Length: 301
Image 1 (cartoon, rainbow, N blue to C red):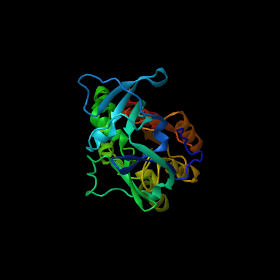
Image 2: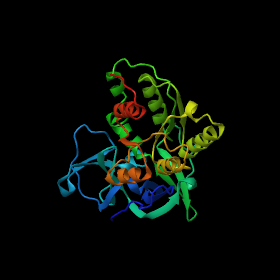
Image 3: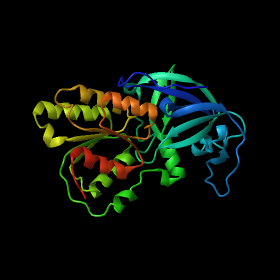
């Protein structure tokens, strides 16, 4: 099964692939998917994490296969089903699922953020829930799943320590990031890098509301001279936020840095067309700091 990425830019829409595990429906952003293939035998890896089924080599590329049923504590998958082969954070990973139902095109405004009864903000692996045809589809946080299996694939906060002592900088920066854990880590990392005047929001809509408020008050320079945004966020995604900022006569000169796990060739092209000033793959927090330095014209040497 081949997948596609939406051709439109900044429409605040996404495509969600619905798949099943143990009779329940789950979802993944189609932008993360390379392809979907029938299950094939894998080679077990000694002493690997229990959720890693093994490795295999479709088209001569080695890929790690993850038993998603095991990750969700729904038992263990048997031979059969499908592999959803993904690419995010610069990694190619296959997730073993039972079946695929189809693709739903939805607006980010339709995605319900799970409350604390469903998903602890920092520990949960659900990023949102959508209702389709009377059925609830839980969208999984695949980055969190992979990071839990191998923490080294997560935000590389040690890169900040390796930068050494840096000067304090009060330039105001606005952050839009829906993951509570990543929001916290990004803020802590930027603080360590000297950037202490930060406002962080949990989605693009909240960030946009603040920008409009500051613009209308005439206090924009005091509150936001740089914007850092994720792409995948409920209510309003980072591409829509970028589009709105760059189409506004007052806001358009604020540098926008897209910091996301979804930066591949196609998504980079979309970001460029929307006017993003820089686009970085999410684990590279050190590069994020250097990019902020660059767009703000700050010399930390």
